[in-house]
Length: 147
Image (cartoon, rainbow, N blue to C red; front, side, top):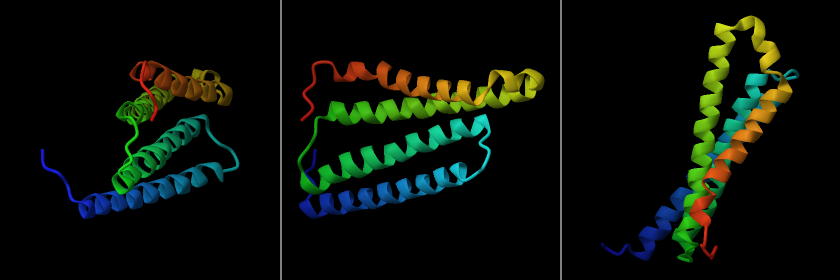
């Protein structure tokens, strides 16, 4: 394995920091577009959850964990970084799956759709997806020191 120079690590860290901040700003704009609507359709709660998970991944994993470690060379435990990255990716995957099911059901059973996907039910499903994603990946942290 070759050792990277300090300049290369700094350049890579700054590049990832910029990409993470830009990605987070794009997620903020997307969340603003969703939230500025007077009436939010239940499907938009899934879109908002998806936006939040991608913004969190950009800010926490890319900008905070990886880029600062490349710049300062003070490494956190890889299991913590891996846990956050995998939990957020699973949350994104499950949210995409819920969005797909939501759209299919709106076409297949349009008359019952509005009673199945109320705002409350949709928010509950989105929250359950977050809890499930983070709880199923917590096994990565068993017996691991955080720093």
